[in-house]
Image (cartoon, rainbow, N blue to C red; front, side, top):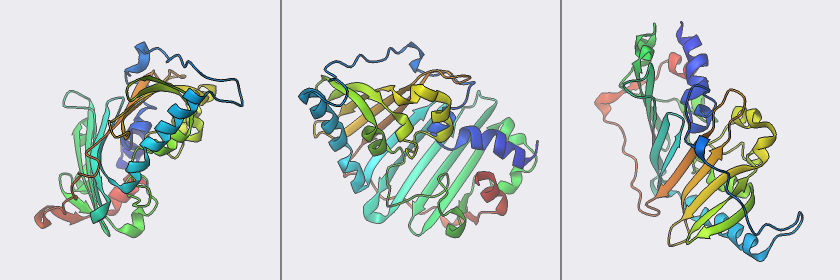
Length: 280
């Protein structure tokens, strides 16, 4: 297997975001035993009860603080975990992504650091991935400095400081079709994810696989005492070869995140062409 084929078969299919990992038919999800939330208080088509309207507005408002770009976050999907921080005051961000573990046939870790105008990525491979021919040319274990002209618009290696939320929760909440409050700061309902393809926690292939189910995907949400989004769980149903699963997004430390740190100079190399080829 060449690096090029490895890129297409593994990285492009499962590596880059929890949403992409959601298309992995070999994973086991958390949502298989979850029941779709029963949305009470929903009004007839074309209208909305005051309670429903208030609940949806609360969710929309809960993402306002995210736009300020000062928070920590996590995203989890099937066998995939992403965590990091965004610090707009310093124009910096850091995202760490893990797929698989020491017991997996293939495991991968990425550490992306963005400190405008520079970006770096450290890539580590485990299991069979580390044994593939050609991976030595990828400077594994080093922070690879990225040419901004080669990652512009690249959702996997780049970071847009105009759209600071890697998960895209604002887009997701705008797609809410039904919602009810289930407790203090707690909500449940459905999302039309076909309107949320730009959310970093989803992707077009996953949405396409869901078909009509994409228009009514169950979710739960929690808000902190200040009304800010602290957790959003999108309960993806089984579709075709894809098993049911949860995509879980959390936020914390609003206004209290820290600036990302520039990697030590002795750990930095320039990224080779093979790296860009892998992610393009």
